[in-house]
Length: 266
Length: 184
Image (cartoon, rainbow over the protein chains, first blue to last red):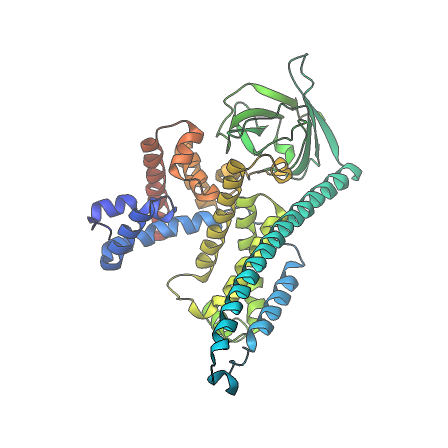
């Protein structure tokens, strides 16, 4: 059982509690305290209101038009499956008379069921892996489609990213439409990184200001195809660059630029 | 509210009775907010679409258990954020445990750090812009990326205690700002 908390200590933990950043034991302690303390519950509500504001403050974008009909179809289909519960099974009369051989039959059934259970689990696991792969492939295809669409769009423009070092063959192409925040980045010959490192794209504004364009990794050949969703349309940016950062990315570049390019004048 | 403009609570009650029209109206009312938050957090159109569908299906299946303690939209966005964080954390676990998979080559994280400029409401934009950058970055990494404080500390190469203090101060400042706005 979690140790009781004082109100001061509970309030100190409330932000972490709402951000899901507490250890399970501390979560239990805060939950227990909140169940009996009206004052701390009121405090919690005020923090919740702040986070609700943040969640609603993100730039608004329309969902795909087909999502509504997809959702309704899935909801109705689910209802059909759950609407009629199967009739409960009633024991047959012969099962009420149990000679000795029935026990052997039962034991054989148990073994058979265990075997089938294992087999079902195995098949489900394989199916889940195949499904996951299928989703990966779908995602990659969607990304490639986006790249092809951009390449064939008359108003799209390519920006070539190069290294400052003459001996480096690392390079990339950013395909973008100036008025939009979406783009596709194709990189080649970037050194593959350790698991705790990542590449990060930076989109430079005026002066030293920049936006984080996202993090990505490359395959063993140094190739990567990445979809970019910039925080603003590309007309807002003056330059673009890629640096190597710790996994998860950094708030600002911490290493020299690997490749980059100016965006203005393109 | 009249029948043409039912409240969220009445729509949820109708959904609990398996009324697809209520789901349709509820979706139309909130889809944009749910999808936008999912897209900001996941950064991928296809994943945000799937997640939005999952959230509305969850609401459809559990509408009967909804306890109206606040706005339904806030509740819906909390569900969205929780689900997105689950996905982001799963991604990070896979990234840490497995060798390079094709998916990881294409994986990008969203860039919500410019929210101070892009936020829809002026008051939120002003409040976020007034925060010190290091507090804002730590708060966004925790809120939109679902990073634990320890992960943020590692990522920013900053002591854990400092990260905790920054996030707490950021939330306290925002609370004062928003409270002031509500009072006005």
